[in-house]
Length: 468
Ligand SMILES: [Zn+2]
Image (cartoon, rainbow, N blue to C red; front, side, top):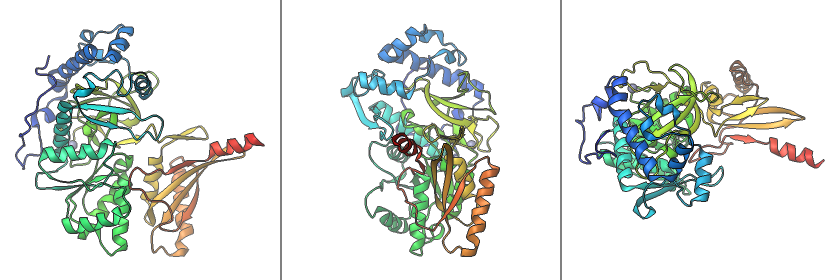
């Protein structure tokens, strides 16, 4: 058993600025040794704690006939039942507001966060003071890993609200001793002001969504400002959308800003959500397994997948005393590998990021479609702008997918039909049958947060035909 648990981190610790690692031993350890010496003891302590302090887990595991002391290996851990989003919502309805996986008294919480609730009842997160410190420590360590240092200025260009993303970036920046610049987003005129502040203050690190970074760049260019020359960014890191892991979007962001683009983020439930994050070498997100233990499982058999294979994400907290998530079924699709990364870290990686967000998937003619696959095609063709929409309709009884894509500013009108043909051809080659509509620059709506690019009109079709 690891002592003390949960771990207490020294808030004044900083590595030497020229060290690429925050915790070199843990990050570069032989994976089997790390599992034995760090992950398993932390996991066992977390399970014991949850069993004793949360009636949710106590009941759930008891009815599955499992006690924490039965878990003697990471293979045994597969016996623990999954926890789904719907279960959490149901539990919070019955035990409002935080649910019965809250392990401390509500009065001892330090922070309340939550989901935006765009798809159903919002989920409430209660976080203890100790957990806040551990989240800050984890984020600082991972941000260090992708190159942030105390002399950086970290511009946080996203909402400060219930949304965990901005706060997580802020906690990490502050713990690391960088200059935090919590600019926010969402107020009228704020994007124009972001451009001015970026030019004046010269922040070196950006956090937000990939869509928003491209939108800011667009506004800057309209005013004759070149983000690569007139701003001073070295690193842009992202969560909330798959874009930073989509190869052609990553390339576009890196070229636009003349800086590196880092993909990060698991899901809000799992904060420290940065426990999935790329290092400065950008070979896909590392799974920082000694912070949050990630598994990829077969969605049908529910068995853990071998490296090299695709599966859905399941996550487990290893150091949360307030509201731990244990075998949380995030359900996003990815592929994992454990081949070496040039950074020297021995964590497994998701080489293409999380390309199948469970919440983003839609079905057309019986086929699962992920918007990130379409995004990769569009942004990989020179001559297209940054924005696009996917509209799914129903003609008679057949689904129809329409992709509306903006061509780049200054495109020769004679080139437009050729661009359309190129896009249709490349989508078809990727197995996506779509009608392409070419849209003038700046016609599609922009976002300061997560882009809503899929519009499904099939329900409307069904409703109209039902009325007839
Ligand atoms: Zn690496």
